[in-house]
Image (cartoon, rainbow, N blue to C red; front, side, top):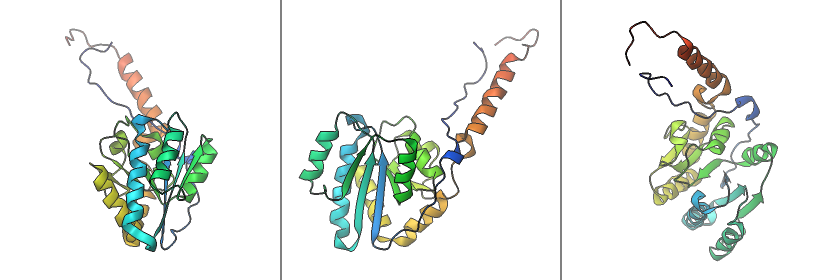
Length: 218
């Protein structure tokens, strides 16, 4: 349709005004993990639960760690059974499907947004969490790397074992968590806001509507 013109990738976007919450301060001796995901195999919620179980073992009784997951899907019963087999059923809550307001309420309770999916083409829920000032801990293979700056507003890891280590550090080092919270409080990149995305759409349309120069050969 536009021979000779470069391909440009436009990212997904949200309205930051809709994803702003009042956050409380982290509680000493506690780390509250939150996640938003469809409960199906490719989302690797089972991997997240196994990481969480190891996290509880690593930090022991000195730190209370909890995990709340909003979303539903065909694997819910299987994941609930996995929680029981891992002996973490008392610390994991499956909230089912919810509205945007329910998601905001969940994020307001969270210290860290966790995502173990490696097939995430973008990660809209993680972007919403970041907009709310919640640091994101995720696998690096997914699309979250387009808006997460490693070590600044979140952490991107190449393996589940690295993800576990990062969560252990955040659970046991208030300073490490505070640094990520400070970075996350800056919000999302401008490229991921609707205003910027729509402006760029219009610019591209205008460029495509410009007359082709006489004698132009792509």
